[in-house]
Length: 231
Image (cartoon, rainbow, N blue to C red; front, side, top):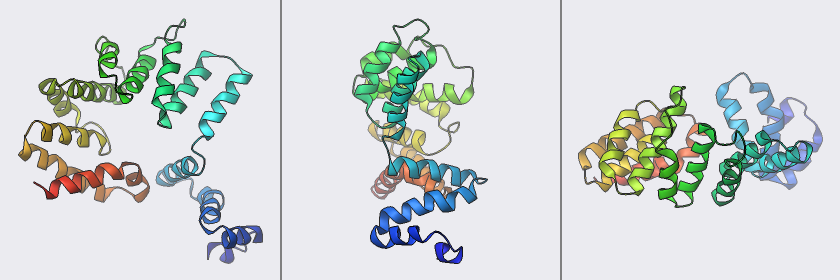
């Protein structure tokens, strides 16, 4: 309808007819979304749409940038792109090479290294990196560091320490991921009443989120709904 109403390029119509899913997604991405750029939810939706259509794009771009300029920043971007794509084994190896370089062991990079190590299942090494890190100067960054510490401690069965951190940051982090990790820890510890409160908060927060925002965290939302039914 948008294509016909706006007398759009007929090539789009051909693409939509013969490749309905890919054609429609591409049309929405390149023809509709640009007109909605003032809306932050639309900017978020476009970013996610690009990632779904071409999830390797950022990685390829990072590799191209390294060919042009062999700089620490470009190698960090490659590691970040790998991590964002869920390829934490490769990201951890890349971060490991970066942190031994001059100026490569900043707290920010060490945090990313620890996060990828944790995602590969190496909680002990991740903790060795995270424990001595100083608090970040920016609150949002510091909250993310604290969240990772809490997750690592839980994995190491240091649940009481993890619980204290979660309780301190759960209301400071946007979205439902942090609350989901906190609820999971409370369930692990057998604290069902407190866990139920957190699960209910997740469901209410999910109802207030846009579809684009919720899509990324939908597994957490569905996990919360499933566990809430069992309590």
